[in-house]
Amino acid sequence: MGASGYILKESPVDQLLTAIREVHRGGSFLSPRLLTRLVDGFRQQGSGPRQPRFGT
Amino acid sequence: MLELRRIIAALSPAVLERLGLKAALRQLVARFGKMHPAKVNLRVGANSAGFPRQIQEVIYRVAQECLQNIAKHSKATHVNLLLQSADKRIRLSVRDNGAGMSETAEADKPLSFGLAGMRERAALLGGTLTILSEPGKGSLSSWICLANRCWRDRMGWQGMAKIRVLLTDDHTLFRQGIRTLLSAEPDMEVSGEAGNASDAVSVARQVRPDVVLMDIGMAGMSSFEATRLIRKDRPKPVSCSCPCTTTKTTWRNASTWGPAGTF
Image 1 (cartoon, each protein chain N blue to C red):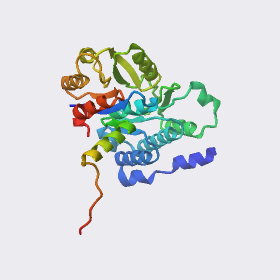
Image 2 (cartoon, one colour; image 1 turned 30 degrees about the vertical axis):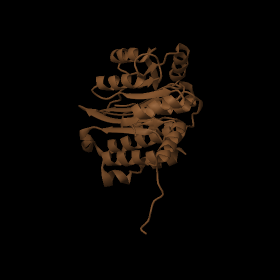
Image 3 (cartoon, rainbow over the protein chains, first blue to last red; image 1 turned 45 degrees about the horizontal axis):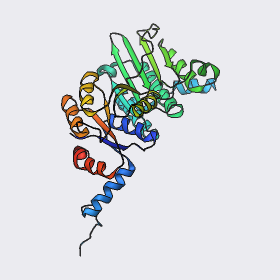
Image 4 (cartoon, rainbow over the protein chains, first blue to last red; image 1 turned 90 degrees about the vertical axis):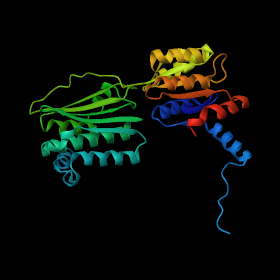
């Protein structure tokens, strides 16, 4: 039930327009800078993308 | 050049024989999708398979020309390609939300291959091709064939369905700025404004927006609660997009509350 997109107020106008269109089409949108922070957050928590391991 | 066009027009698209009109149009749209980012919505009426062969060819060719024109000249993000028939009337309409063109633009370029070709093709079977377009408002090409008589499209220009946006921010100037920006877009309009989250919920009930832009960190009701309520109100969930502040606290809140359904 949360929002479909998150965008920063400092984002360029083009990003806002893209976000509105994308969300309207049923997709989602996240400012690239927010995405970076999110990925960093996951990494710090240790739940982020890990190096794939191949059988030992 | 004219001769070449006649030869091209006379060629029967083999794809029609192989696939039938509906599948041929689908293939056309799929090909368009590979070279252009616009989203194409294709709707073909049930009885298109029963159209006379010549009619099917003209429909295919006109659709092809329209998509080519859109790919070349328009910066459309959405295209509606609609084929309907009722009684003896067949109507093909191709609508896009691209750059559009002025009425004189076509007259200025009498050698415009695409448009002239489309008109010629459309006239072959006594149909009428109407192209309505305004700069910045996209264009609508519509080919209508009524039995064997020419029939003028009386629909007139109808604006495209716009994305209706509700702005929520506690700064009036910010809302005004966003309103000005969105008004310049051909496919968007601001259908309401609210200065806080709780007002946003009641305004959303009145204006039924397609997208809600919700600031985070306004006084009073939390934006996340308002977003939840707005989505709950709508039988079909409304999409909310939140311009949020960049402070770390706000973002931490956002990642705790908001994105549950997003990520």
